[in-house]
Length: 293
Length: 243
Image 1 (tube, each protein chain N blue to C red):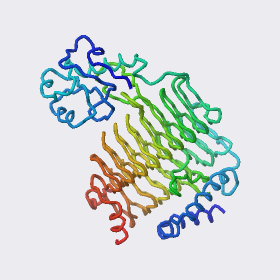
Image 2: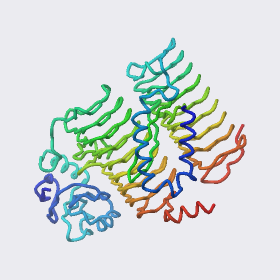
Image 3: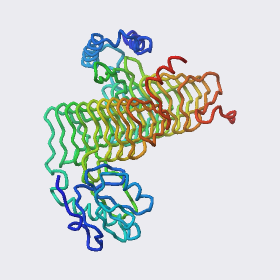
Image 4: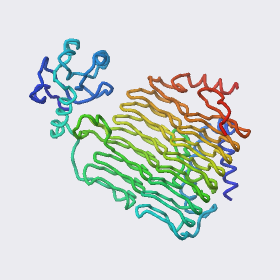
């Protein structure tokens, strides 16, 4: 991964308070290695302190003094604008962005004629099945044996900040690992700043679910209908997420977790737990309680 | 044949059988895995169960040019309106005066997955969907086909609003109304004249008897009996329904 200096890439209207090195862009909720983030509010300073992956911050002059001394700091009148200028500039840098190539589609893949596949930067493996009206956007990697069912969108551009008034080009993509099953009317957003939104091996996602950008789902997970995952969510292996469950941004969910129907999860959940709404129980104890009823 | 398979399948799914130690022995797990793989390969191509053998299209239908319909294996009645990007898969039977909104997917594969021998295997769905007369289906609604030779049914004069998921094997009665964003799990049985509010979640295999009213955002995990019964999982029993 390329390491870059903050002072080399920021626009002219930005002032460097302390220079620093970085290798990726991100938000307060992401955990990209050595990342640059922007903050505009005083509350965000504590989040910067708690996120150890942040190496540089773009902020307003009033907040610059509150930041820890080991971080590179740049100030701008509008930090968000400066951050997205930086992203746009880095997107043109081939060392920073994902590799560009003409789309590769395996000869054994079954693709319905009504499906739309981007002519660039799409890699479709062996025995992949793509059904009617599916849209596969740029920087999507689909491994062998995966199935994508009707009207789904893989690699959709996430809505970041409409008030920004500029088109943001994401630098990440979507990676569907081996034998994933994506059912109808599902939207999987592509990562905006770094790497991929990942769906693990043999993971199955039911109809009408939405997967936010930068989310990583482990192997052998089952996501029922209408599940909505926020941005930068991480889900361990062998999880089960019930219908209509909502998981907030940057929530980390361990392995073997069982999230019940209609839950709203806003906190991290450790391995082997059952979550009912925002209330968490040990999964083995939960099974014993149910058997006793 | 379909009925026998369906009964056997439900028996195998029941907690008494599925949670028994015998089913979790490694030999049994491998046996189930092999059986499932054979079934998944052979069932969709063999005429095991009831299927729509010849397609038919009634008169005075308005079908959007971008709708994708498997005409040789779909029956469509008269006076139907089918919107943009609608997908109607094989083994679907659609009655008269049915309105299907844009982006709806009728008869797609259901979500039936088995965890066996350390992996996940899907169960091939070889059933179909029946949508009776005068049904209105909103945009982006997903109606899954049934697993084993049965039909997922939506009864006469039922209204299904936008972004609703109707799972596999569900039977919806007549004159029902299902609100936006509701998710209904597989094998649920919904009676006549029921009303389901917006963004409700209804677990698998639930039975809602005639006349049940479910308020917006409810999560239903138990059967509801008796006409006029209402329940809101968040706030307890609801007041009497307004006439």
